[in-house]
Amino acid sequence: MLGYVKVDKGELKVREYEVYSGYYCGICKSIGRRYGQLPRMALSYDAAFLAVLLASLDSTPDRPQQEHCIASPIKKKTIIRNQAIDYAGDVMLLLAWYKLLDDAQDEGRKSAKAATLLLKHIYQKLRRKYSRLCEKMETHLAELRRLEEAKCDSIDMAAEAFSKIMEDIFAEGIRTVYGNGNMASGTESCCEKDTGDTGPCRLQNDLRTPDDALASIGYHLGKWIYLIDAVDDIEENIESGAYNPLLYRFGYDSDNETPAEFRTRIEERLRFNLFHYLAVISNCASALDIQKNQGIIENIIYFGLNRKTEEIIKGETDESI
Amino acid sequence: MNPYEVLGVSENASEEEIKKAYKELVKKYHPDKYQNNPLSDLAEEKLQEINEAYDMLMKGRGSGAGYSGSSADYQAVRRYIDAGNLAAAEQILNSTKDRSAEWFFLSGMLSYRKGWYDDALNKLKTANDLEPGNMEYSQAYGRIINMGGQYQNQAYGRGYGQNDDMCCQALQCYICADCCCDCI
View 1 (cartoon, each protein chain N blue to C red):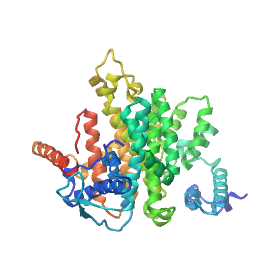
View 2 (view 1 turned 90 degrees about the vertical axis):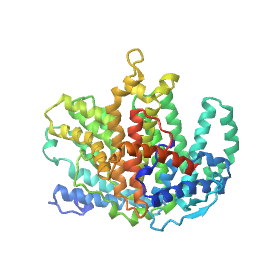
View 3 (view 1 turned 135 degrees about the horizontal axis):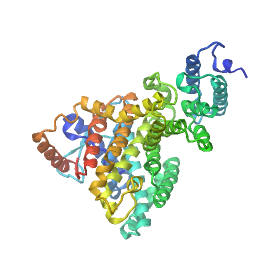
């Protein structure tokens, strides 16, 4: 994941921001404690969202602690620990590992190769712990690569593999944190979204269980991240000639339009797709029986992702929150 | 097999009742519930029986005005999409040569259910262009186009975008800078 999923800090309560930071720093600490210092670099804010969301279905209150941290040795940081945080850390490392492999293969970068050597034992450990998830991820990644090489001109098809990876990550997360079947039987009724709407025109898939809702959030967040990243990279990819699904889907014509004109031409369709993903994410999230940190989750879904979408569509670059 | 018995409804049950009973049963025997459970094979068998019974009962039953006049294949497609069996619906749609408005409509709805919204919008637009007066097609298109707006309204209702005057923009930058110090 790439760090697009963040809170809108200005709209967050101070208390909520502390908790959010506690999750972020908690993931970092969790990685450091179990795998050493090096892989902590892989952390991004996306992981914090995964951890907050996964943990939110459990009513056990968060217990923030104040601890020192290597990144800011003087001021103590708020740290939260729970299983969802450990899981989010593991997933970040897996994604970082696959990214490294890709880099090493792609550009034959020496640094990437060296890093794979350093991380190999960690990957092997994770591979044993999450063999099913890893298998699925590897299949999807191979598919992703294939579509990119084939210069796929459908955004849906191109995004599918990455979205499925995210779906698997969220679905595996709920199994890892809550165990098999626990959630499915426990909170079934609260998750029912009966719109009285049937027939092929019914827009929403049935969200039978929290597992379904979480998986769907993962899938649509994956689509959103994939597309946002493609929009963000338009100029860069035009310059370098690298594959970008948007250039093929909308037939970028380098002779007759500038990248800025291209952006304007496709803006309406981009908005349709991006906001549609967010609409489904928000529907799924409101079907969940959230026990804590609802403010943070809603802030990310309605403010953070919303603002990011506008920024990237307008082509503003903003490297912070 | 008596499909009414399988679904546990009376023989003069309405379509709504059948659908409701079907949904309940699918939920009850859903494979997700039987993961790592010795009864999983049994549940799977039962689910298959339920699906067959449902198909039997729904065959021949029209579902309102929008369903009239379409060929038998498309009835099956509608049923499959409705029941969430997207692979079966896709198979029928792919194997037919017809490219009528209805084909584009159903293909579009199928794409929609898969989460392929870009693709869905293209196909629904084609269906609407081919048959501009069709309410079913234009309603589906309208609803899909409006989803994003609903989200934006909800965000707005929660206060999104209401603090974006100049002062707050300056503040936003301050918050960004502050955040960097905090988190790195």
